[in-house]
Picture 1 (tube, rainbow, N blue to C red):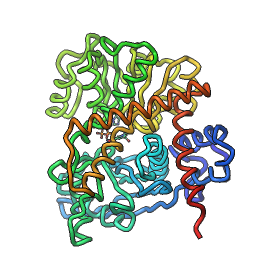
Picture 2: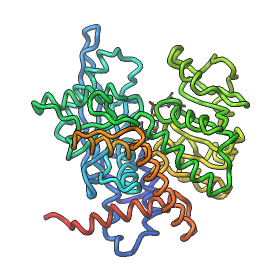
Picture 3: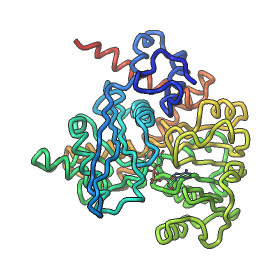
Length: 428
Ligand code: NAD
């Protein structure tokens, strides 16, 4: 339980949720920041604005049902809010606040001109038809329309949302404006002002930062064993890129369970099997292992790419990876971080490792504003450069100041945010 006077009245101390993890990380970094920034640190400890909305929809059977939705702007000191929209039955305000906080820091770490935001709906989208999902998305967009806009806050896909959901959001917002506003969301279909390379961008960024870490540590990607939790947008793309680079993806876990093949899974075949069967279990050329056994598999790379708090004090002792590359947001609890550091396991933190998505979202936003579109090679090259440069700056700081990569990333990100805040000054 966190005993802090900063906790807002709308969160309960007994059940703070993921905001607790974010706050603990901020507390750790506060001690490392330049003294001149300390008067502003409280800015990071509270979201700028949080909206809770009721989202009623008519189901296909004629019934009306209600869902709870959220949009949070954590900080907009460096630019408009930016962050995904998550559809999941366990989404809470606390989770959306934490995800928005991580977006603030992530956008500053890769130095794109955005603040941090996030949204979500407490819904299991697997229970809805396509028409119901469209109705849900349109009503949610309409309910949060006062918060979003191309120079205000730009949503993007997150768990269980995709390019189609972004197309519906863009269309709904545009109807309200009476004109087509492509720049209001990113992660759109390419035919509607989306960017080439956005689909794979987060996974590509995970792979690039893994490769850079491997170089520093003298680990070869060729033949390396990789295990991946989550086989969606982020997990699948990063697994595919590891495999293309000659690594062996020996285990993949998703909501259906865990599959294993010591010689390396066929990632493309697994993706096709999942699309056809809606489960990983029973895929050819692999065996099923328990979800618990997944965490102790010996490997060079572990990529968590699903939910928060998956690496925690219960499994951190058993993890047998050399490098953890955080595709998911908040997958490692602070207790687990300490255990992993003690055991010499290097963690490439979420605010760096999964920033490829928002980096190409930034490219998409710029392309929409100028109505001039770049080639996929240009996008991938610019993404690689930003990810590699950000990684190297963080690695250097971690070495110079003898701190973990997460602390170094937070020092760089938080300093940029607080410098912007301090320079702008307080209104009025
Ligand atoms: P997704 O919906 O495409 O995929 C999520 C995956 O997680 C699925 O394979 C699902 O089966 C699996 N999963 C869900 N619950 C699980 C459980 N209890 N155990 C094991 N696996 C489980 O989502 P995504 O877009 O790939 O996002 C995954 C993570 O990456 C999230 O933390 C998200 O915030 C983060 N992220 C996503 C992006 C992006 O561009 N999509 C960018 C940055 C960070």
